[in-house]
Image (cartoon, rainbow, N blue to C red; front, side):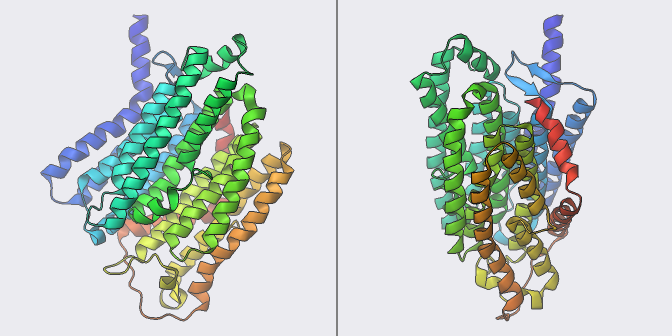
Length: 483
């Protein structure tokens, strides 16, 4: 009877992920039965909201803990990242409806793959065992590989998918090497048991353990696009469908940070001095390369790709700090980044029409004169990505940098501020093109109810968090206790 109750509890705690997977399978069948692809998208949204409701219900009942022999954990830390994944999936579906119509790519498996990828991210955030972590990562990765090349008629989409798949497979192999080395030394893949085994077996000075640690940094660094593991991002972001670029720039990145925090704090917390030194170097390189290379980009998708790289360099400061304030600052940063980055890509989709991709900087010349509301919304996102008050991006950087300063990392914060100033050039250049250039011709906007809703949500939240910054931060602080 005890075993039955344990299994039942495990099924209840894993039910949000199961709902998304079952909904995705249902969407594949629904796509065959009906002709209106919008119905498939709305069915996907219903599945996501049902999963959210179940997750909130479990949290309200106070259910938490490790299940399935300690392989899966339901806690506040994982639930916070799941909130990011839910928001990412909902906004991606909203901005996809109009985009797929223009690109003639409205296929049902597109929405099913978004749900599968989201479920994979959720497994990653709740993994308390390296095997479950790897399974979640592969479910996410395989789904995003297909989504990247789902516009089969576009050569650049096919090219991006191949590049992403090859480099992603390479990083997955490196992760497996790290897992195998750690298992060989400690005899376990359970994240909590690894920490106790390192102490009990006196392995903290082992060169093989340090090599395994480097493998983990490389594998996770690829997922969040840390330099020098960023080489895939610009080409993949440019070639993938714009809606999927928005999805990849937020969801998988947040999942990478979720496992970064859980594995490095819970399993390798005693090696903080060793891995923090490596991450400091990578953080500086990431901020520098991302900011400097973004300056010369005229394609906005490539520019936002390098922007995403530099933002990973900022967010990793929360991991380096290794304090509750630092981790909550990182989590708050990622949640805010979700709204402002997907919002920026939504504007790109709005300017996408038959024969016009709306991705080049020249497409935004004089936009304020022809479409003042669209240019104002884009201005909000560019200001927020730069970190200009009173937008949410400023508060995100402020709390993150303050946490790093309190942890004793003043020099790296100074470097981060310098590159934040550098990044202002390419963000504000978009604003300059919209407000200080003359329009070359009439630009047609591709709007729809779902796209407008996504823009209203992202712009409103970006402004509201800038004015009332403590809302999400308090939630993040409460969630850090899960670690």
